Picture (cartoon, rainbow, N blue to C red):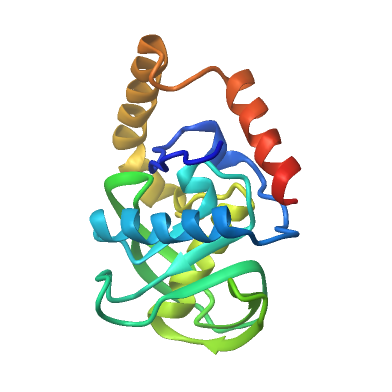
Length: 197
């Protein structure tokens, strides 16, 4: 586990469906992994990234709406809780675990998030607009929910050919050993959980 290099996993990788566990401790290794998550996110022009997406079973995600390392504000949300949803808004979403797939998703317009940052300080924010949407999208990941689950049947049907391609890709990667078996993945996730949850 030490010094492991993180990579973004693509749907339908099993960790994307794994319900993440609350983080009980923050150490230098976890701080390093969060920095690495930011680097990965920027390298892929992303604005949000959840721990499940880098094959970690921990309740944390990061956000920077600018998608650039020297711009915008970097947020780290550890053990987030969402509350007070208000209104509804439909907008197009994408996801780094679903390369080049986009679709309309309806979510609450306004939400409140309460979480902790890397320094162990409590963060409480009322969110709207893009930040509210990204936080909800990443929060879903922690519960093993992906954005295609929130699409209407019509939108989902349009996305199905791309989802079938992702399925085929994962099967091919498993045959080459690039993606390990479910048992090996589960064992690794359990190690992380033992260390941090």
